View: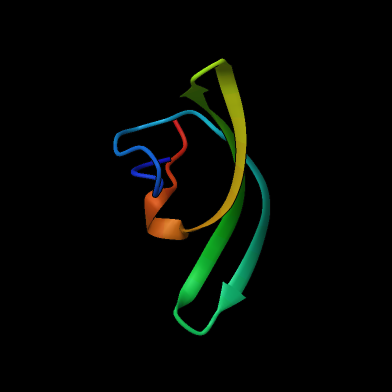
Length: 54
């Protein structure tokens, strides 16, 4: 995924669900970010244009 709100850049994540909204498709993604005491699990809905599979 690209540029989640907390951490700009490209991050690996797991796509859990899709939903269509008025402004287009969004994916619910689970991913980890570095935290003060180790990795933090984050779950967020992101617009489809921020998601990319490699």
